[in-house]
Length: 333
Ligand SMILES: [Zn+2]
Image (cartoon, rainbow, N blue to C red; front, top):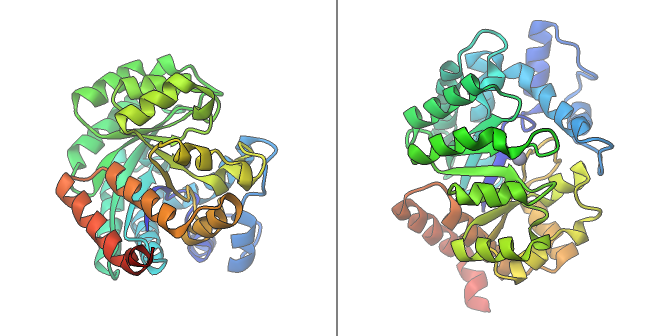
């Protein structure tokens, strides 16, 4: 199993949040771990996207110290390993960790330390960080994140994610940023197309290797063709989309049609706690509501391996591991 789209914010363990809240006298709605777990899970069809993101932010204040970032990252990696994830690209927004005086570089350093320790103490998971740039950040902050990505690439960081919040900003804001990333040859994905497809077209033109979400791709035939031709991997997060209200029901998620039309899609969780899902549960939902077979889910994992921000040799290794893990199922068919 591969998860290419999972944010640390919104995935912290409730027990860890409670521990830090008590230490710093931060008020929480409850100090009971299982009640907090329930509280952090967004309801289906949030009235406003902000409702979903406010729940994610509830975990961000914890991440204002090196030791907390290190621990949260390590715990997430170990939790994913226990779930059977072979490879994860974890999204981390260093700019969100600067409220208490840390610099972005400090936050990235701590996150890499936590990530490496988590991998060391796990059975078999491999993981990398994808640093996020949000529309809320100013140009200096965005530039700093690019610098950190460049500095740490292939040493815990594998790429960038640009969160284009189309409902708030015009995509033109990001032209300079796309140019810079392209010049520096940093692999990147964009959160785009939850609301429209213009942003996806633009991102692909600048060389995006993957698209995060991309709910509305089906509405644009030319774009669909371009995505297939360029082999751009589309990361779908159905449970998260349902929470955010971008799809009506699970069975109406476009992933089935996208897959059938030959788009290289893969399935991801987005946020363990706020989406209230694991990758295994997501697979079960795909089988139950959208008729995906085990072989098709295996194919989506191969798509994920292909779209991972890794070297070809690392991708081949991952595909071999996937084959080994699914051999019995493949041979049976
Ligand atoms: Zn996301």
